Length: 426
Image (cartoon, rainbow, N blue to C red; front, side):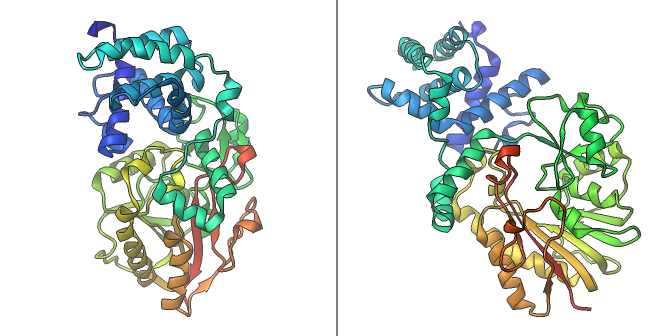
């Protein structure tokens, strides 16, 4: 029986177990010793897509399956049911094949084999759901530790809008090396966004897009591309990109003609950055060091600090993150961000510019960091973000830029970010 089991679905169930019950991230599971290690590249891609889709629609799958069960099945059985429901109702797979594959998975183990008949009956009834009924179900709720904080800040209606954005996932965004979004959009069949990125809706093979081999662009969420544009590096300036890997912002800065130093504490992540620089034909000095103890030869004209954070703004791309973290896990990051802001200011020339950002929805990693930095450094000047395409309503009373996943919902949304543009006194 084991030979008839789809290895992709088996790997997806294994990854779901690791994320939901062992609190691993997807990045932890995609290495040479993970569940997808023995799969072909296309199988790996499909297993990851199924896993992420199931995590993204976990709440809806549970809403479908709960009325169809008299009692809770074992957790591994529940994972198989959730995966199958998402395959049928979200991914549009043929119910017959999905149901048979789910039963085959349960037959793998003596403990779950007796529940194959139950799964068959439950999934056949679940397949009767229409796509409209499925889409009408509430989106998956954020983890309680995050949802509670955001609901207290923004109210339930706004939180539901953010959750809806998470359930839709994220399109593919590209940053053009030459800055010509309109020309790149025409080449790849995408949309030129007002902030200078190019968006492609639907599933595409990135490496097959025109300009990939020649390094004419790189993949980067439209929100993630905004901080470097706001820094506005100039040709010949000495610019540092702190916490630089995997390199999207470094490449943006290097494309301006600035003399860029890309620093990151992780050597393996810097290897990917160097590969990206090679592909695009851009250059930067790459340094593996801890910024808190790094001593460059001279201060910088401008610094981009994309500080380590909870990454709660990227859940639409990484629905596994809330299951790997808790509110307690992320608290040490708040102090680290504070220390890194102060260190970045030390590395700036008088009159120099600092753009601080985090891909977080939490005010402790954004609004509060800006507020406290101004209290510690009252002579700092906040410069209101000025970039075509930015909605003035996104700028708060302090002059910081708050971006949320529910923004631009008609265009496919954005990752959540907080961005502050600061100038050191001359």
